[in-house]
Length: 161
Image 1 (cartoon, rainbow, N blue to C red):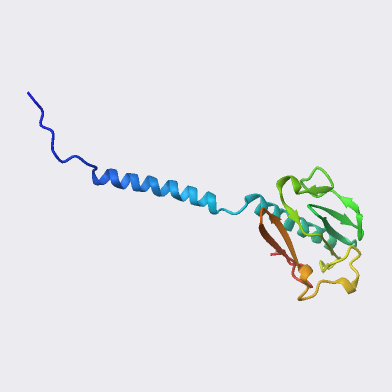
Image 2: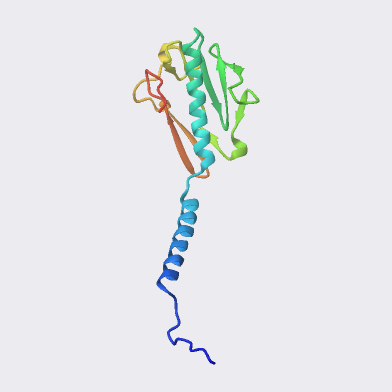
């Protein structure tokens, strides 16, 4: 007994739909990875924001000026209005955080806070260096691989969104 083979060979509608769904999933993953921004840059920028908020919080809870100082790809927390009086930040092993191993650079800045949380662009928080509306120093640039992220410090209040 011989079997009759149907003459119309091809793909069923279900097979075509499954292949299209799989192709869509794979292309979404590939496009997501290719167009994704540098996750190290994003996470480090958020960490720096957190450290700036910590410095402001410490200043508001004491009568001492606290701040963050950056040079090249390193930054550190300082107290007493003295950039050389380094303090270890929470969750860190050393008093200086080096971002160069991650390929991240940070613009050079000094940002200090007084007991009211007001930001200053010097270590001693002198009134003449208080951040005011329109100051370029109110924005800190964090860079990696040609991509930039910005940290904005609101003048007068020190709010960091």
